[in-house]
Length: 403
Image (cartoon, rainbow, N blue to C red; front, side, top):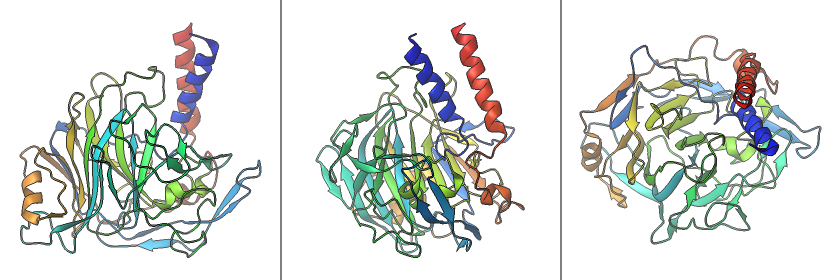
């Protein structure tokens, strides 16, 4: 292996162990029993009363003195699905091909109640017909900041680079390992500012609202083929994922080196829908569902994972999604019966998710005591002692391998 490849491998391992990285360090806490294969994964009692810290200032972001500040007055949240009842953005990591996407809301849909409210489609993308309604494709190809990381940009038609304006993702565009794309609505944010509609965000990015609502649903038709295009020392090699973030996170700093530059560490919300968490032979075809906030845990990096997995099909398209009902039940499923109609009845949805192979976890009603202490308020760019341990292990492993 050439020296340049060796150095890139070390850099990739370093990135994977950075505790300020909201996406790439998502270790899972599991119960003592082995996760079971399922077609439906669910959380009951999702949502609690809590708060998070919002970014109040971005200063000199393209200089060595780059810094961020947080508002001393926390943002409070409560109710079903909170804090994920706020606006969220949708994120994808390769190897992945997106065929269809849709976003729905409902007035009062309740899982198991066929007489509850129908789902109404507000956003839609179809790769084959090149239909795009209330959808904006972005990627991480913007300017790099020493404390914020790389900013958002419009994605070009195959998501390989930045575009000058909003562009529809072409059919059969395949994201490779560690390559990401995100979807926001097509509703532009107002000006950046504390208390404004999108809060503080980077002034040089395309800034859009996410997808709103307490009772909401996202549908996907997608492929997760085995990686064939990049070397196996690539970060997140052959670990595809689809997940939701509080929309404020990517508009400021999805992968920052300073925890004050994002509301993620303080618990504003992440929901991993379908995620390969380990590329070893026994786990690379298992898709897990995890929440990252402080409901039931003080470990935001690990979060809480449903103790089951959905099998990853590497040969065929998979169709399914995630729903958040009006009572705080979140369902993740795969079903070939899933449709992308403009209106979906409660009874049709219930039929999609009526599967004997279901794993459900009941969540605590309150955050773990102490969750609002140092982990939420620390402003250090790296404040986790285990970071150095993991980095040493990674580099030592590289040394042993090369020698």
